[in-house]
Image (tube, rainbow, N blue to C red):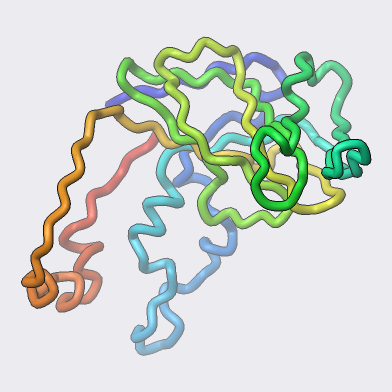
Length: 224
């Protein structure tokens, strides 16, 4: 089994260590029935294995301390910035605060805050990690921006990830999920495009067998 290693750089963060995403599924999903009717004719998203795989792959990382976020106008720049308040001594580098909108001028003119997690992530040679918002943990306050990090070679003691801000005033509580980490093996790929109209007429297990994909095609992914 391939190993991913998380090393904590601050004692306070040890209260909220990373966990396999399969152990932290969103509450709405856990409460959801698998069918909408007693006859089991209309399945819910809980029967969708591709959704399940996206939700449970990799590891969930958590916010370590309460953070109060308040947006405020940058009058000189015509954008919206923010102020953040958290325990004294937590922020040790100014780069942790955020990035100006001009660095990524897409969407509403708002600065980007940075989510800092005091964990070093190490993977074996040839393996990187996708960093993204936790799949299906819907949050209308903020959202970590997706990135890929070569975690086999990067030498930072902790990670700072840019995030979009949606609400004007909110608190990110200690222990809230902030990112999903999915390790993968790097490889070289070559794209091939074909036109074959016969594939539209072929019989498929997915269309002819109930739960055909889940029962006969799906491969279990293990993250421990």
